[in-house]
Image (tube, rainbow, N blue to C red; front, side):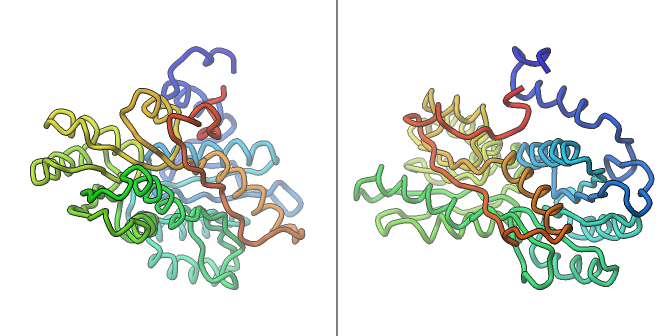
Length: 324
């Protein structure tokens, strides 16, 4: 799509998303395919997304692209970080008789009910980012979130070089990916790094700004902040800077175009690339292969890699539209 080549990444995403949706109809639950095909027709996949952060948006874009490239139809729904809405979306997918449901869950505890409902209807569930009992699901493509968190913790250990340092944690939404991510980070910290503040901001930039403002007021000598995604990290950076906390080094997660620029100009110290593009592609191709009973790994893993200013130019593509 050459018309998007010279536009900012966020604008390119908006334009590309409109093209990705070609052939799909808007419905109350999201993007809806046409009528479920008769036997022998194209595979119909449901995708229940957990929210609308940049990760969720890029993940859905990647899933939509890959489904289209594999001649599969797609029905999508957004759970808005609400476990009850997620279950409702699962039930709606069941009513639509999709062949499989790909789920980016909002809460790992909620998955038990989701899986039970889908199994009863003989519709398999494929998970993204997290996994479950392999006997209960079609498969999963996981991000090793504990390792992602530990990579940021390892960077702080190296940078601190044995100094006693104070660390803040701005978490995401409790109950799913954020808990694993933060757990990997805090457990990976060396003994000389003390967590002095740990608070969720629900993956919402405005909340992260408020949380960061409170943290820097309470701990003006803060050395590092671990922020559970880059959208929140940008908000935290502004809050720290405005309160005289420019020396606070931020480590975060995702590897978007905007974050790579922030690494280069010093706003961020490190991030961990876990490409939403890769996760979405794997989710669709693995789901289709497993439905066809092909011999593929039931649990696949999205590669994670620490990115700093030194290697930012070689970071993996995060979102499909980043390369448009």
